[in-house]
Structures are given as structure tokens and as C-alpha cells.
Length: 428
Image (tube, rainbow, N blue to C red; front, top):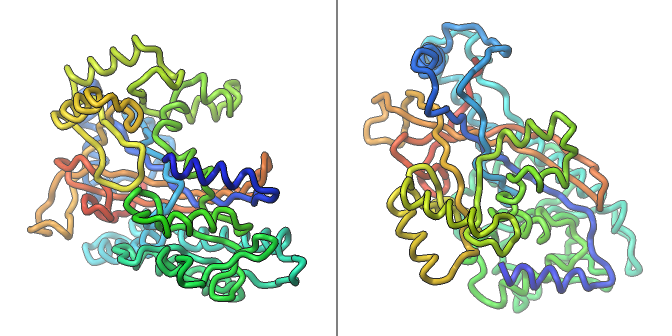
């Protein structure tokens, strides 16, 4: 985090700095079930929601009152928001599966369309147009073409999802060149990355207007100084970054914990507007391990630590980093929490109220017995595309969805981390 902050400070001291921001985001939610839900109501909801074949027997009713069920935000992803490509393609696969299982044509369209990859491609194309309008002209010559450069891992396990985004971009916007490069490709020793006197970015001699990061979000992605220097050169360039380093710094669990407090959210959204209460209702309670940030006083911090030790099943310990498989639950939470406090590390983790998602029954293809119906829970991600300049919002659109499903016994749910599977919603 300190290295990112150092780069940000260096960049903002420049005479010129790109002020157009592109965000391709995903906000993740769980359908939280009130532990104190009336048993009779729970039985009624179970009958309608627990299995797809049962749900198909009821008509879609958008006005249903699902008392005791509420969407709660798990986290907000600002960088390398994955599976926009695969979620667009999985819709047709699941419709085929339902058809083979005897579901009616009317039931098939209850698996909603998802155009996340196309929408993300369109947002990148819009960013390229804005870039050319603002930065295409230069003292060294004008440019009518600028490329999108995807920064990826040299050992990418999620290559097919990235390829789907690539395919959407080149098919929908064939006039925009697309490049795929790794940090290693751009090391100074290769001579492939250059900035001109106006800080315009050129890679392999090609003008780059948008840098789309699908890599570079955890410490392990920066193994040496050469890689950190590449990050700095990209950030200081006039290319529009997705996301820029300011967004990376804002996309921490600490900031999300801050925004979960009504007083902090009110700084950005008028409390008198309905959107304020709607957004606030999706937030789970979150806490820092110190009063240093001014979000909680020491008494509140001490109380939540005490609660975690006595009832660890009600909380999750989450790190200030991205990537799956890094949370602590139950007894492991207590062990890790005690270790952090003994080491005096009060800053690298936050505590979040644990969510208890509604349980469904389904089949999972990666299980030892894919024909066995098993209990599972799901996490719904809503993709969004955002372009801003200063305080002006240029684009802010919902861009599709992702549904990930995991076994009930699994605490983590990341697909790339090996915990969850791609799924599709079925409208009820």
C-alpha cells in the first residue's frame, strides 16, 4: 500500500496528470437471511426458492415481499473485476441445460441475459474517444488512433475470461487496436515502453490511449523494482488507466468500512434522498482494529474485539488486499486476530459482520459426484462501468451480472481461487 501511495504522490506532483477516470467495477452481494426469521415464513420461502424446478412452478412476481431476506454487500471490486466475459457466455449454456432437463421455453427466458463483456468493451471504446479528443494532439504530431492495452499475468489462470473481453472489444470496435502485455514485457531493459515529451504512452511504437489492468492488485504481482518502475511509468503517462492508482487506493476494506457508517456516507449522498437509505441498507457492519482513523472510538474497538473472541461465527476478518482466499472465519479468526494484536498490527485487516446467505439446492460439476444434489449458497455481482472527469460523471451504467455459487460448507467463494463455480440467476 505504501508503494502505491508513493507512486500516487510522485504522479500528482507532475505538471500534467490524466484527470479522466475509467472504472470497470463489480459490487458483490449475498441474499442474507435473517437468523430470526419466522419458521413458517421460512418454510414458505424455501418451497418457492430452494430448487429451480420448484421455482419454475410459480410465475415471476416482482412485487413479492421477501420478508427476512435482504441483499447485503460483501465487497466492491474496482480492479480486474473478473468473469464479465464468462458470465456473458454462461447464460446460453444454462438455458441449454434447463432445456435438456425438460424446462419450458417460458422458463428458459427466466435466466436473464448478461452483456457484461460487451458493455465493458463499449466503455473502453468511449474512453479511447475521450482520450483522443483530449490527448490526441501533441507537439510531436497528431494521432487519430489509440490502442487499448490489457496488462495481464504471464501465467494467467483466467485467460478465457480475458479472451472474451478481448473478443468483444475487437468485434464491436474493430477500429481500436488491442494489445496484451505483461509487466515483464514492459520492463525498461526491453525498450518497448516509451513516453513522449507530452507523456503520451507508446508500446512497441503504438500509441496507447487506455491501459486496462487485469493484473497488479496484490503484493506478489510486484516481485522486483523493474516491475514497480513499469507501474510508475504507466501511471504517470497520459493514457487513461482502468483503474487509476487513486481508485486502487480508494478500493480498500478500510474505505468500505468507512462508507458503511451513516455519517461518512452522508458526505457523498444527500441523506434526504431515497438512494441514501437504499444504499445504507445493503451495508454489513464493518469495524477497524484501531481508533487511529477516527471512525470508531477505542471503546467500540475493544467491544468488537471482545465480541469476535466470544462469538467468532458472527464475524469475518478481512485483509486490506484483493484476490480470493484471504479471509478468516470461526476459530481461525480468533487465532489470527490475537496474532495481529500481539504484533501491534492494527491496520492491515478489518472486521465485518458475517452474512448468512439463503441456502439452495443444486448440482456442481466440479464435485466428485456431479449428479448429487447438494446444499449451496450464492453471491451476486453487479458489474458497472464508470467514466468521470474531476467532479463530472460522464458515464455511469449497470453493465451485467455474475452469479457465483459454492458449497454451503465453504467459507470462501472466489472462482479463480478455486472455491466457487459460475452460475446463473433464475428469476422468481
